[in-house]
Length: 456
Ligand SMILES: Nc1nc2c(ncn2[C@@H]2O[C@H](COP(=O)(O)OP(=O)(O)OP(=O)(O)O)[C@@H](O)[C@H]2O)c(=O)[nH]1
Ligand SMILES: [Mg+2]
Figure (tube, rainbow, N blue to C red):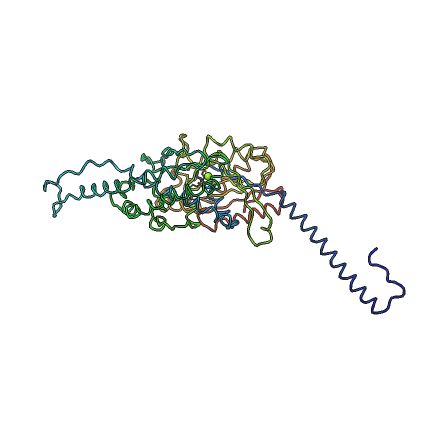
């Protein structure tokens, strides 16, 4: 019985002491009850991690968004993968250099100068001087062929990935630039494996770093060479290809003691194969982040691999659907001659239509905002590729708004049930981008799937 009855013959002092002890006991008991309740809630949270499925076409930025979330909300675990990312960054750099060399027309052996024709005042033909320089760079950079082979050996198979097919830009008959795609195997846990390979692999990587460092001045010379720049200037895709970032930063990246920054890691290009499961234990100090675990499924966006997504539709809480805003004037980076934006429309329609996904919430991420802005600034007309845009303003903001409306329109047209729907325009390589996504995730979890469609 609580509170206890007071003994009949207790003194005043005894009574006061007893009451004080009872109060302490009651407070203690309350504290224990609260702790039990808190533990229960935490255990519940732990039992039910938030399951997020990242969907979207190839190259839309799914893995980049995943990396951004990892770096923002699990920075300690993310840092532990630095070594593995460093290999990918060097591979991206080296394969781009090798690809540039492949793009350059073959040079014939230098001819003796006869002093006539197109020679300059000092008797040296400028064309032949630049040919000699290209030939010199080709020779000096030859070790990078081997480096590419060694770095691209997959930890699980030891096979070397082949270069992907070229993509083309609509309205241009130029084949666009495409460097080697580094493909990781389904469930390979390649980052962990690359660490486990031990000292042998590390020594080999150290040796590769030495070669890259030795080649650094020539990598820079190649990238700054006028002949090279004019040879690739017709390749529009080359201008926006993320690995050019590594060339622009070659001096820093080629140093033997180089440590990748978050910014560098977000620029890596590593095509996903199959479906990868990532567990993200939130490290943040905020109360809503404590003890929370997210399970994020990152998929390959390639058309041939989309059937592999279906088994993951069961049991997911949130689908993040990624639309690359810059894809409006591109065809898919695959064999199918399809406009990138129209592929996203089609894919979104199928997902919204799916009855298996009746219980999920959607976050539509309109990504690559920076590249859309760049294209518009360069004078490309959106309406030339999306005729329904007609005579609306040709600026990045109006186009993004238009596309948001389009995607919500498709959802409303085909969705069999109402589900929470949020949309967000962003640039995944911006390190802060992940913070805004967290707001939507919390909103969805708080609402517990309200039966109302909303557009934020
Ligand atoms: N400029 C720019 N580049 C981006 C952006 N988002 C992603 N990228 C780059 O685009 C490339 C492809 O991004 P990924 O995240 O690998 O694409 P993905 O959707 O995972 O592609 P798959 O795994 O092949 O399906 C990477 O090199 C990224 O750095 C962005 O907002 N702006
Ligand atoms: Mg990916």
